[in-house]
Image (tube, one colour):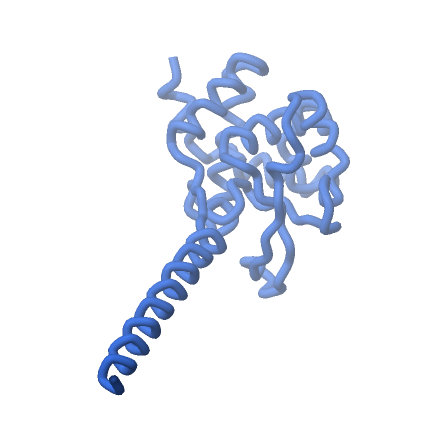
Amino acid sequence: MAKKMNDNTALFLAGGLALIGVILGIRKGIVSAKKVGTESEIISGLAWVIDNYGRSFAENVERVLRWESAHFKSKQWIDGNTAGMEATTITFPYGWSSLSEFVNDMDIDPSVFTTYTMTENNTGITKRFIRFPDAYTFIIFLAWFIKNKRGGRFGYWYSLDEASARRYENNIAGVVPRYVNEIS
């Protein structure tokens, strides 16, 4: 009888540990799942920009994307599908009233946006950033924002200070927009 009890106890413990492992594995998958913007999402987003704002505008959107995301390899791109939009509040639109306007204009459910924290690259300070549902949505937001909120000035994505904006535009001018050049 004691042997039977020990076998049952061992099976119960093994089953319990397996269940805990599955739960933790699922939780880890949910918590650490990072949907990196796929090449097809990037190309689709840039194609949308071409259709709505023209090829030259799309080239500059891609330049900003590549500059800000280290050619789609930065932690902010991987974790947030963005070129790094800092959240200043914890509820939608996270301090970006223009994001609220954008979701209204584009008929997007605001609940698909979330936030995440990370240590900022240059400062070492932990900050909260906006996570977009996918790269496509961020790309059309970026284009919409620059066109509608910044008068088409790409330097104003970086700064509203004229000298800083000009420097930024000079910096991104050297970036090759490979995806836009492939879209017919």
